[in-house]
Length: 172
Length: 242
Image (cartoon, rainbow over all chains, first blue to last red):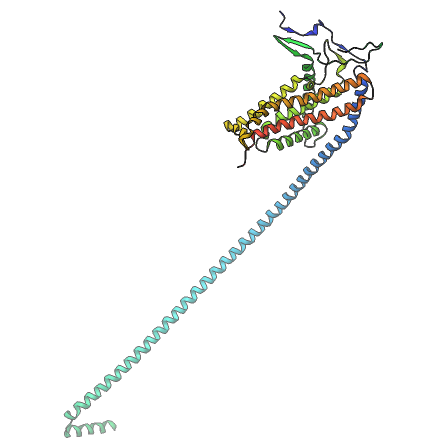
């Protein structure tokens, strides 16, 4: 019992070649194929060519953009480095100046404080002098008053005459 | 089988003669297999030749293949949606290209040059078995797409706008593969028959308009088959926006 039965062995008919142009519709087919080729080459060829051109132009645009962008990036980087250097310099200058100002103000403060202190001292001395002067005056006045108070008791005519002679002798 | 008793042999017209290959208990239509292999071989050759040296500047066949790829991808993306189209792109592309080359190959290649022991070569899609096989594949694939993506929630689709649609949607599951297969089969076989009859009556020139029309409609049928397949898959994976 044959399981596989392929009529390649020519049991029913044979494989062969049919070259009758009418039977095989060859005439019409050649015309159709010719027209299709001509039509497709035109229509499809144009469409494909346009597609290719669009792709190529967008690729070259992208490359040009890339180049421009790289150049701009490099320029921006050099600008950035320059600006950073300048900023560095300005910062250093500023620091120095700030230092100098600080020192100057320190000195001025010290001087002002010193002068203030001197003034205060002078005031204090003046005040002390005044007060001591006043006190001396007061003690002198008090001594004189006390002497005046006790004088009449201590002074009789004999002492009085002695005192006058002494004074005259001092005057001479 | 019609044979005319003319003194000279012009053309014969017969339908339903096949080259039978027997494997086990099955009879295969050998002529469909042979022409399918030729179509597959042609497609593979085209793609292998076109993708051998790919350059950034698309020239010649590479340009054509890229154009076809773009076209198929737009078709799949439009019908299936952005999220799931990539999984189904090869399937839709294969359907489109295979059916397209089958149809145009059947119409343009002089198959009758090769005489078979029984039956004759022609477009593979002029055999109902080919188209039914592809339509059943489409059915299988949209079920698989829906179930794998949504699980059993896929069956919500049957009562989607209103539950009244349930019987119609169930009938659709049968009519979809039916219409897909018969639409393609009918178009291609009818074109073959029309051209055959016209060539039988007037061998030259008169069949030409029918042949050009046949090329046009068969190309559209390939597109329709692929678009509908993508549409069914898209419907199955479509997420309802609530």
